[in-house]
Amino acid sequence: MPIWYNTCMIYYLANYLTPYWGPFRLLQSHALLLAGGTFTAAFLTWLLLPRLWDRLPRDRGKAICSDIGGMKSVGKPTGAGFWVSLVALPVIILFAPLKMWDLAAVGALYVAMLFGYLDDRAVAPWGELKKGLLDAVVSIAIAVFIFLGHHETINGEPVMLVWLPFVKGSVMMNGVGVWCVHAWVYVLVAAFVLWFTMNATNCSDGVDGLAGTLTVIALAMLAVVLYVVVGYRPVAHYFLIPVYAEAARWAIVVMTVAGAFAAYLWYNAEPSKILMGDAGSRYLGILVATASLMTGNPLIVLALAPIVLVNGGGGLGKLVLLRVAKRIGFEIEEGSIIRRIRFPLHDHCKKNLKWSNAQVLMRFVLLQLVVMPILLLVLLKVR
Image (cartoon, rainbow, N blue to C red; front, side, top):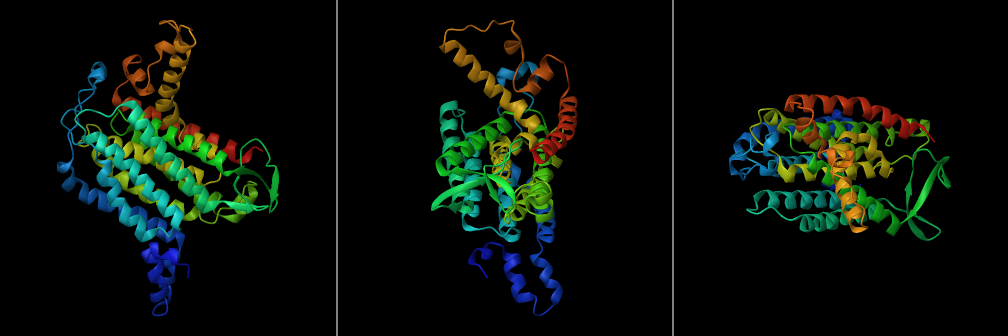
């Protein structure tokens, strides 16, 4: 038995218990581990969170958003993502059989969470440059860990095998076309996906339950893709995509975290009692990106979290566009559509369209549920 299975206590114990009672072999079933991890994390978070949130810092509100209720959150415990993710960690260790480099990636997720929590606790919020650089370091580290844990060696050179939508790969592997991506190219692209998704999710956190609900939906669909599509040979062959044996193990990770944050949403439903803060939004965002990379397709995150990326990522794109335009001497007029649209997009809907928080949450969730399966089918099926 490989030593890395020691990281999954239940899987490891099954080898000793099965000789005494045959049904104990089910403890090595990925489906059972996935269900057990999800329920255990959800129950423990639901039970423990009310007993822990008094130890969290208090939200100071957003004066810049006072016209759309930015000060309503003042005084609420924030940074709950710290406790929720910590509750999920021993459950991940208990239920998910991960290799060494995958464990290293999980550890880096918690570093990203810790940076967010320290920002939540800081008297003066961290600046954009500081947070951006720290996020970049964590993103590069996770990209490197993924490459080291999942690369192949072809003609003596380490490469990552990647499949992409709309195009066939340049190399045939077991009847499936894949692209062989060199280490430095893969790390740079993967790090950008991780950095952008983390920050887009962080920017989407501003309406009770919004970022949490959208990312929990994304994680649930990710688990389906990891377990049923890329992790299951007949389905993977049907879609003409490579099979990733470890994908099912990451399905356990994402559903365990989804269960924990679903329990958090029980208390975050409007009017919320608690906020997840940067600790939670950054952790969720970078987990969605990490698990998406585990499917072998860096672009699949566009289908799994479309509303999150548009809602929060649109602001990042607008900021870059305005700064580049200013630098080259091109002035974007105040009345232009670029200036008029407010980001995050949920702020635009509240301020300009006069939507309530409940309307923003419901309509964004409905859009995610409609758009996500369509985009996912296109990315999986069209070659």
